[in-house]
Length: 495
Image (cartoon, rainbow, N blue to C red; front, side, top):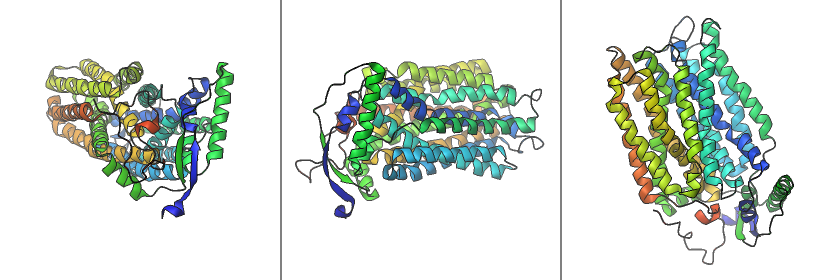
């Protein structure tokens, strides 16, 4: 079978040339063109969380209750899991650029259809379609970002970009204030317009993305080394012209057995048998952050309105969102300086402890107090949650990168992100009769345990990937080695 897919053996310096680049304006094109997917996701999640009251009346909304709101969140996440797995496989097979254009289109279609929902079932189906596009984006975008950003900046850029989810969350929170105000817009029209605005933003991003190149690393492995060299040469010229620098030649090369396709059986065997510790690590990180964020944030607007008498939840959600983004932005450089293991362990454990403490005092908190506690917890948790995507995207071989991101996102999010909103939605419904907010504290405690547990797994199994080339962290499956039967070189020692 190998002979049918292998196309030759080459020696390339593309990874070393990409990693030695200084930060330049060109890299901002990558950040803007690719990173804005998280703004879309934040916009979607926040709009749903903010408009729970608008969706409940049968006259102007869709006649949904708190359990339905939780189901809508779970359906969106389920769609994201399916999309991640489906499009993740295609991303590794057909390239990063084709897929991050396609998945953005799927998202745009899904969110436009959501705006025309006539009943809960239509709404659930459209949420699933929208989630499918977003899930596919995660696989395509994270793999492309890590392969285009120099190793010295990869950690901070990846964490900060993933944290930009909260820019969309803040924007979504503030948008819902006028859109859901009956004095400004008809209540039956405002929530529909909120979804339509997401599609407008997607079209703008699609226009910017046309200028983002295919990953040179993907190109040379798939038999297109000349095109890879041309892409890198173009990037080098752009960076040299923009910064007025003379780029030094590189000596480091890697020998690659090129393949047109990488069998799924080989990918699965690599993840499970060659890197079992990294598999456990990534699943733990995704499970913890998925439950925490999807459970808390999908239903937070419902919590405020049901138990604390808040009519306009947008202001509270905006404060919460800003703290998350500032946290990811402020802490992101530390993932390259202090290191991955210490930072991920610290952010997971500390945020988990603080969440548990918040659950203990839930009955004594006002809307402002609960939002303030949430802002502190998620200021810390945001950077850790973003680092889950960073970890999955850099600790496995390049040929498996997009599918690994998709796999761990899907199983972690399916376990935590689907069950979380369902559990919280049910807890809110059960506790709403007595108007006793302490009835949802168990959800906080579950999230705390999962986050602390994931932090401890990172402490023992984490990979010191800061400042290293992707090819050194995990050798490509197609890389030539002196002994073809030997296992990949040992991964960096865990802390």
